[in-house]
Image 1 (tube, protein in one colour):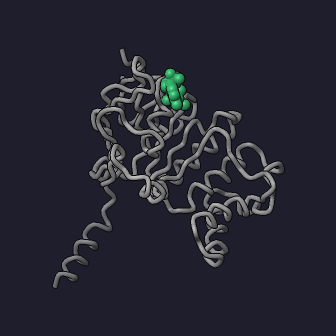
Image 2: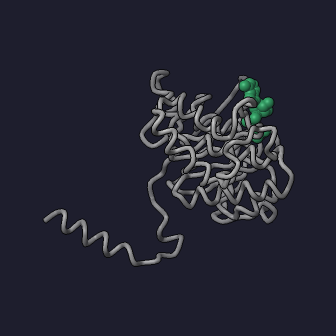
Length: 258
Ligand code: ADP
Ligand code: MG
């Protein structure tokens, strides 16, 4: 009986093409709850941050250099702990997470940075394969998954190229492929286009949008107006340790927060 009811539910849901707003999931995947972060006693970096990020959301975190964007991402990754308040990642409390739980927590998160951090003596394929090896995947899984992941990022034809044979944008795509190996729920990208020309930067944001469409939650920290505008998703602006703007669908350039 139960199963039949479930089936009906599914059938009911499927054909409806709901407008984006209605189909948004209500569950948060990340929640900042009254978060303060100080590195030094007299210099607060984040003050009283409250923010929920829902599953499947794409958010662009913007703000001037030193406004706490990277710190915000490090709190999600549990690379830093909140000084006051808490960050929740699903059920996981970052304030109290045990060291032994960190690897499992971090497998839920793919990370992308300004510098691509590729292994220079390994091909694109091997760079991605190496990340899988480190995560304990079998040879069979690696042989099966790496080509698929390279296809997602559009590098199936460059699998055997070494980093120095790839453009900056392509190298960043390898880094994005590597960030996908654990099938993470969330991707955090800290200034991913900081080393790229405008055209490659657009490519990277397009790819992040694609990956978001596959269901991944994306948290992008960037002061690159062009790519934040291109993303055209929720924009959260930090200034002086506080959220000064949170727009549902936003363009960096139209934000007036004062
Ligand atoms: P953003 O990414 O927006 O440029 P950050 O989060 O990197 O900002 O830095 C916010 C502030 O915190 C800056 O003033 C920076 O100098 C300081 N800060 C960042 N990391 C540390 C650290 N590990 N120790 C001390 N101060 C830090
Ligand atoms: Mg930063």
